[in-house]
Image 1 (tube, rainbow, N blue to C red):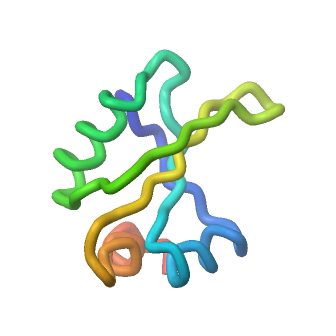
Image 2 (cartoon, rainbow, N blue to C red):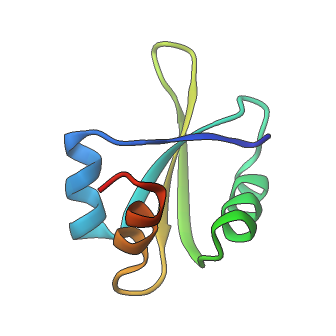
Length: 82
């Protein structure tokens, strides 16, 4: 399982509205192309760009920018984040 869970914080909520981006906890061994494919297949959205980082707690996080004006907002609503 590449995508573990979506992240929702106050900062992410602002990013959903302003940048059309979402954050996900992902598997440590997953690569950017694998993450993009998993998100596109699982959620039926188009990914424009992706950034990954390893948090100080030792978890890998992916910041995913989606195509379309309301994609992140719609996906967050479908996931029950908003």
